[in-house]
Length: 353
Image: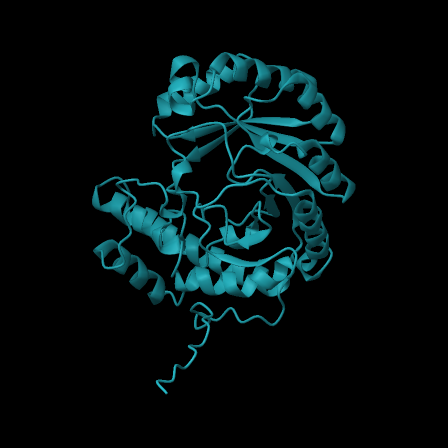
């Protein structure tokens, strides 16, 4: 199902003080902090997008300050929240909480932060081993922020299901609930567009499961579109429009906030998601690859034929809705499956003379 909110993720920085083993930090090709000029232009582009044709999609637009790093490492994070609120957007943030001092918490709340997600899915020595941060400091920071935020800002606890262990998920929910925090966002392990090596997330194009998934969708006349590039928009710290947050290696960029509009990236993104030439073919959230995972589960006896059929129907329905969304954002843009391939520069002829 396609979310009713379009989320724009503005990456204040892709640097991080944590060293989570489920984040392939060593695969980022470059790191930095967004400049004030680039952030201001990003908000300007967001206003332009919200008030333009995309508004006909009937979806609210939210700005999230996160990206692939710890946003509070950007010394202007509070000012950024204020600018987002002044522009009339709902403002959210994601953080590991380790540098959330009392002064910073008060400043963020006074600037109008409305929602925050703290990624703290372990406790004690296990947290310190997996996140590479001091647990007691993080715990105190999160608990203090929650007290200060009561009635002002929604606080969610993110649990990355890296263990794939339901008992552990429930244990962590009980741990935080005992401390007055009962809103949770559970994320399955993701391969970050192929940047993180996960043995079971191998999607070689010649594998039998990938071929079967393609054939099943082709029989329904569907060339799927992934929702991430169109519902979870992404501006990198360098001001580039990246394909989506799964593009951990920053391989697919389509213009910058300084020279093009958010909507200008829609066509190239559509080509990218349907051709799957770059990030998508290795990404575990790509629709074909999610169907591959369901087929593999079926072959292991862990999913029924009805589950597989429902997965196919879900992809077909999502693609239909995404085609309507793309059309509303960029009227006249072809959503035909034939609209494939990356735009390539022509070869410059070389003369031997």
